[in-house]
Length: 195
Length: 155
Image (cartoon, rainbow over all chains, first blue to last red; front, side):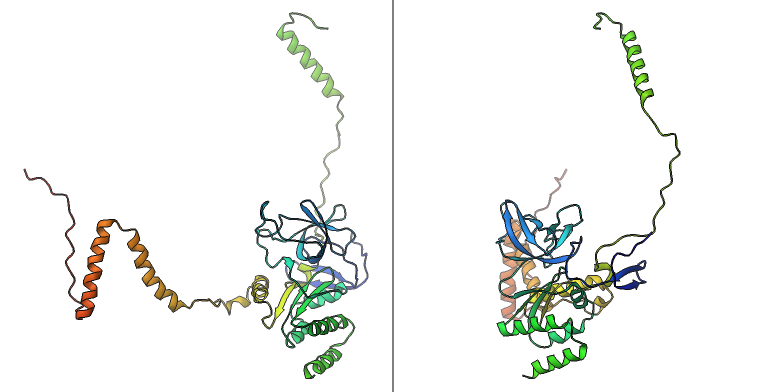
């Protein structure tokens, strides 16, 4: 039989064979296979990098798991770099493993995230809200000024805009979005685009 | 126990008896196989298929054009119905330019692979054609040198 282990809203999706899930709120991430996350390189151990993904264990990432990487052509990864990748193996018995290529060997945007920018942590529920198909927050923010955004399912968001001030504004809005209602958010954005 | 000259037959008999004894000692279950109940429940730990989430890398207002291209690509993989509107990708070189380039390109590379004789013929043609253009006569074509064919020996 089925047992519920988390509290939250029960959601149902009738399409694709029907799926039920519990929509709960949490800040701690548990590695899941197939999730795209942002990891911070903490150590280089021979051929493998250790990444901190916010879970209970550091994940491992082999240097060959990048697009176009061979034994001679190693990716230029330093300690402290940010990596956007997906989990290849993630269960409670083994150390999680990450890769930066998909099944066919293409990187699809995964890999080292560039210089500058700002990394911060939010709750997992907000990430899911932001990644929903037609997210108002993202649409409203995209009207403000050009910027780049990377969302990791482990609660980490990386933002980069043209100036430090713009970056910080976006960071503050995203962090506050969790507790603001739609109207408050629109007011705040109107103030910003006005000034 | 090493007996010299043991017949192969007696050896075989001995081996078979040994095997018999060993296999009889093995335990086996006398119970019929239980049918495994097929559970209709599949456990999925990730949120990705549940909520149809979009791709995590985004760029707005042209901040990072590669990421914007990726966004279109990855999001169109999920929603293939919307692709039908925009199928044409913006190409660096327009179609007309491509057609023009091809016209001249095919000619020049084709000439490269012709054998020497044919190249000479072509050169004559070109020179004559150039003259033609100057004269303004486009109808007359210079006669090509007759190809040397196999001449059947007369009887």
